[in-house]
Length: 398
Image (tube, rainbow, N blue to C red; front, side, top):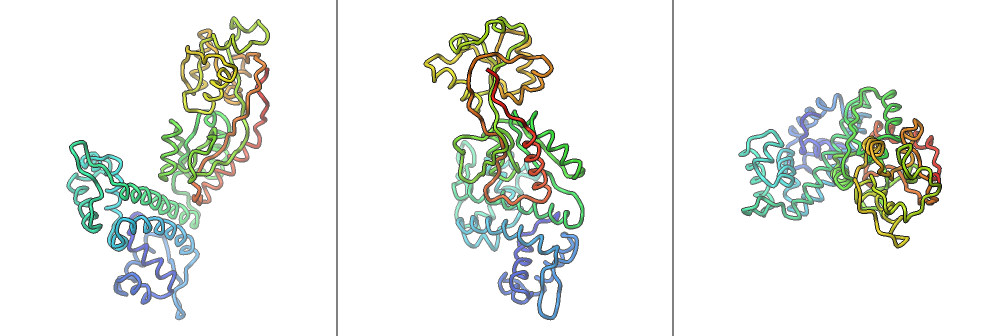
């Protein structure tokens, strides 16, 4: 569906609900020829008939039954937000206007928003003016510092993002219906997931769905959580947060991991037997960044014993960078046991004997609570669960 026309979507759902173009025309406040034209265009874009047309009425085809639930989910979410701003917008708001509104909420500047959309600045300005006129009130506060969205406007932009994500899901499911692979699965990968579970799951997924695009993003957890809640990321894989960060996401645990303390072979502390926390407190460290569960456990190791947290710290979440730092210095490293498995197995790093009983960290998937994955997304999640079942978890040695 290259052209997403909200009115066509509404007409389609009205015919699905009422069974006749005449009744749908009355509900949507358009002529019956307009209904016929809308269905014709939507069916052309959807790749085939959406209704069986009989004397008893219009009934959804298998293709129409794939499309209807996704469009309904998207429009129900969108219409609730439009009604909060102004009920009239349910009838008048268009896809280009909502795309301009989202861009303006994010950019807070007409020129930057236009650049994001690949449009001329007057085009974006006109779209915002039109939607504000229909709403009967301003949706942005103009000041010398920029154009800032009001709270109802931000809520509408969020609802529109998620509605557009549903429309994208509909296109992927229509392709599945026809035996084609389209769409893109976007995964937010936290450090551990990049080396454990996720690679195996993607390889297995690609063997079964070689043409479905997979994009893996890395970055800060808070940034990826924002992308997840906006519908820009499908799921996050990595250490789960305790407590759960917000109620509109689900955290599904896959396995439990533990931290371990590492050093280069031949490190001065390697021959000392069990190393006590007070000795560890005096060392230099390479550890994950602040705000991560691993960093919290690392600092708790010292604060729980009344010791100062080490002040000689290099923050890094990459095992590759940590390995090089440790191999070229006397720094110690604190990182996931699973993440460092290859380095220890190959003799590049060794585990320090500390007697620390590290608490387990839950590793898993995070996704939106009301998310309904496509068949391709469901398959990838199944492969993640399968890969996680093969992870043998043991407590970090000594």
